Image (tube, one colour):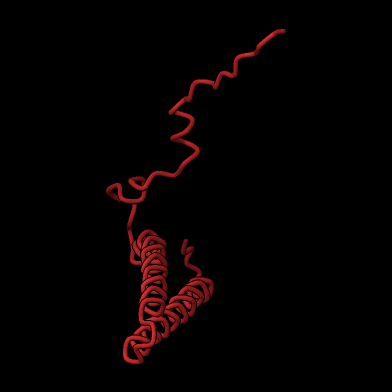
Length: 111
């Protein structure tokens, strides 16, 4: 019986670097020449951070709701945290589309 050996090809990091955009590319000197380009560079990272914060607050509110038990005050605080997280999601959603629409109207390539 012939046993084959699985071998993985060697990784060529030069090709990998070209396939994955680097975080340092937009921050080279001269990359941001006007306000629109600065916004285009920073805004996607801010949306990711805001999305992670939203997830954290939803999980935190859910955890507090589960551990509140029959404590009405703790349950109300947990519901408030979840409500605030959902309001934050709504603001994040609206701001994303507002930026996209304004970028389209003003002719700026954002994202």
